Amino acid sequence: MTSTRFGRVITAMVTPFTEEGQVDYAMAEKLAAHFIDQGSDALVVCGTTGESPTLTWDEEYELFRAVQNAATGRAKVIAGTGSNSTSEAIAATQKAAKLNLDGSLQVVPYYNKPPQEGLYQHFKAIAEACPDIPLMLYNVPGRTSCNLLPETVIRLATVDNIVAIKEASGNLDQAAQIRCGVDSTFEIYSGDDSLTLPLMSVGAQGVVSVASHLVGPQMQAMIQAFLAGRTQEAIALHLKLFPLFRVLFCDTNPLPVKTALILQGWRLGSFRPPLCPLSPDRTKQLTQVLKDLSLL
Image 1 (tube, rainbow, N blue to C red):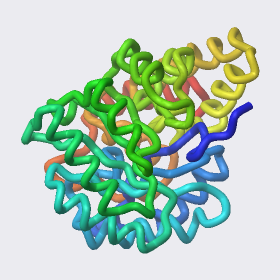
Image 2: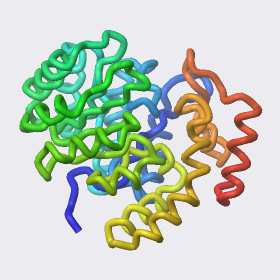
Image 3: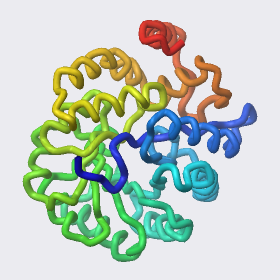
């Protein structure tokens, strides 16, 4: 079984807040330790699920340090330091690199919708300014309104420290095109739990997961079954977890997953505006799925 740089199950961590709305760094450490105990090979800190748009750069840096304290020697830590400003992304990534983290997640620039050449130059500039930290590209056109096309990814994959992509376009053909055009060492991760198994069938290494907040061992079991050739076992696990994959996106991420953790007893505060609590109807829907899977 081939090894990977970041592992198979990467949990995109929620950010816990105090009741007063401040980042709860001690709770972030506890959560990180729990996710690692539950099978996470790596943790993404300050990604979409971590409510990064409403965190300050200083809060993000402190979160990187807190999670690194919990993860050292046990799991990899990937810092969400991307931006729609190239200079901001470089500054944040250079600062994170000084912590000797294992990687940086670089989201496709959002809102300003650069052409493909602009995307290429953006990521290349970050990589060249931050040579000591491996970069994972993050393509999520549903949030950025901009799709990083396979031919651009293939160009970027030749840059030394651009080593992986979190592919959340929802397009299986796009992932397959990337796999056909890049070196075997370049890693592709599903950005959607429900597409983990399909994407692995066309050469992905694993998943940057939301569901692993709740079912880390099952996500690992599904992936390991597939890698070992036990395809029917992997499919059965996928189908069992499919209602959870769906309900965790019944509303904007991270509203459902953070609510699920709170229902399990984690003290995570609430959400930073403009996010708001999950509606009672959707909370009821979520609660039923959690009960069906014996997660409550």
